[in-house]
Image (cartoon, rainbow, N blue to C red):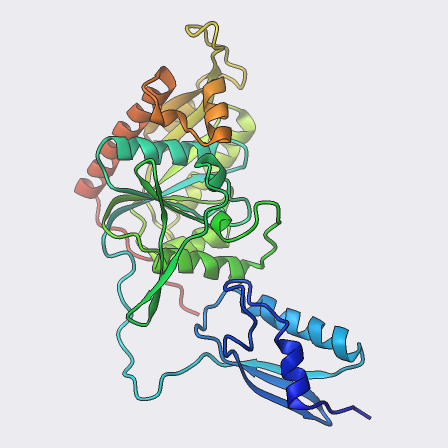
Length: 370
């Protein structure tokens, strides 16, 4: 026979369940609306503020674990129902436009990991800022966010301001770039273990709730390969165009072809603005005029010709780029040969974006009919 527990006892146990996004327990937050204990088991009704709260799945599993750990493994959890709060008497308003002040949204992608995609995205964003443009950088590499380290801001935690019944996440502003990253919300030593829908919902929040303001360019650093995150981006916002990053190595080039093809599919239909060949050659600091093609020569250049895309730039492999990424001082900040390489890359990107906006129709969001 099932043992029934008092509502007070269950609520006391639930007060130990912490909402990861706020750091407060779910009882204090007012998320627990109903608690019943009957011969069928324990039933709980949760009423979160937002239906797309990415932490709901985690909260639900923590509730089950906490109750069983306290009441015994034989405790029966009959139901944990979730119903977002509804404001009575309030008219349903037309959804607000997403990123209305952003002129160009640029996806920075790669077919595989390890080609320096994030290094390109960070230095490109800073270079655009140095040229006088207003720039944002969204780190959408949810499971491996490295942008915070490259800005030396791993301890930064964004402020959240509530205005007009909406939460606004304040981006980090540094080196002339507004930055938001999953890494700002998790401990850098913790692994991000989220299912696809949870990761996609969190990305949606960074896009829609980020206080981006007026921007000439918003660069979105995507995870390597093709994933739910890519689909979420093109569903949420009209992407102006994509950049594909590769190295001259054959393995990387093969995956870069898949990345280009994905954006060009009829379903997604996002213009490919160009290809960036990273680690094009190695130049030792003591021999700055020497070039050693350790990953092959002109692989990216040849691929650009084959796929009929613009080669936006060839970035050398030099020690200063690696050191700058590790110590939070990206090379694009300096008036150096390497820094100027990214400055020139930014110039060619601007030319490509201007040509795209002049000659092609605006991109529309991907519509998926369920």
